[in-house]
Image 1 (cartoon, rainbow, N blue to C red):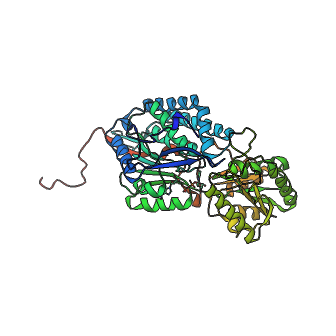
Image 2 (image 1 turned 180 degrees about the vertical axis):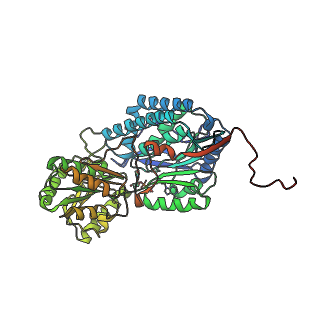
Length: 500
Ligand code: NAD
């Protein structure tokens, strides 16, 4: 049981007050490492969500936040970063209990969250209006940035705090007001973050928080003219539903969706570091990573040796409860999700892929109560297989082989998604040709999985629209306005004055 003041009920935060769900609803939050109930939290219904949107609307239309000087808003962001720093260990523990990820991963997530708040504080402080030369000395032409308005921020369960912070930090910096809805599977760290935002003194109505399923409250956030921007991270199907729902209101929609990310290994790549990077890319957080490198594309001449070494290393990965320092990776997020991953394993076998390792629930009695699943590798995969094309979001690595650079590129771009890709080669010219030709939002050359707050993150194709992080991640939350100021108005003379 989680007994932490940072997540204690009431868990809805509307107009600066912590409240219970109006309808009295609650939800049990389960620890995926052992199936125990971690916490019982408030579960909003539609009326709560409508109230949260109304609070954000009022705070935007008549409150001070959008008109607060940037320097003052930056102060709040830095204060939130400081509070997060002070609660770093508590936040990491909450994230591990709720998601199952190892404590080491959770600490990395929290450090990234702190860095994102600091990055956007710094970036907002450097933005200046743009003066445009119109050719007329009497005219002052300025392009200024203004907050986009009320934002609905909807996040997934795999990086709950990280994904939500990529939204809240730039939205606050831009002067927006917002309603945040974490995943109903992993809401605890977002509750804790909003407690810290409250402690930092952010004015009422600026940040509102509701907990519920998308089916219950989704349309209150997406099918309304009172929301100006929906920033969504989650599955492609949900993203499509949200885009359709928002379309009649012409609401701006930013979508960070799934991926099926190729990792291409040329024969001249350093063997050991390539094996290491493929393992981490595919099996970190048990593959529940949007940019997981779960589609290995490896040169014919090294493929047998490469797959054998991968399998040997994959069998040695220690999976266990995230709080156990010996665990290298944790369980899947829920029993339902493990069922989905298992169904993909059965599908791969039925499609003719060859199971090399994994593919069975662990026998260890300590692990049986949790939703653990071992690293699983399939060789002899073909590009047409659903196992190769669909996002399994679990620890399943597929292997395809190639002979020529053109074949490697064709396979690497053979996806409806386009979130991330990796290439490994010692040949700089080949590497440069590949990174430019791959149609993905992030491409790593001789590395995999890294990102930084200052560089944009997002997808091509079915992986989404818009970008988070970097300057574009702030621009998502800003409108641009052109102000044309004539300092010496004269008669224009377009129409004759017909009375004279
Ligand atoms: P999901 O689409 O099931 O849910 C995401 C969020 O949307 C949840 O908060 C859910 O409650 C909400 N939701 C569901 N239906 C809704 C509706 N009709 N209206 C409004 N909100 C609704 O996704 P998930 O299973 O939580 O997360 C996994 C997915 O997220 C994977 O596809 C993964 O690739 C993707 N993801 C992408 C990125 C990225 O940066 N591109 C990062 C992390 C995760």
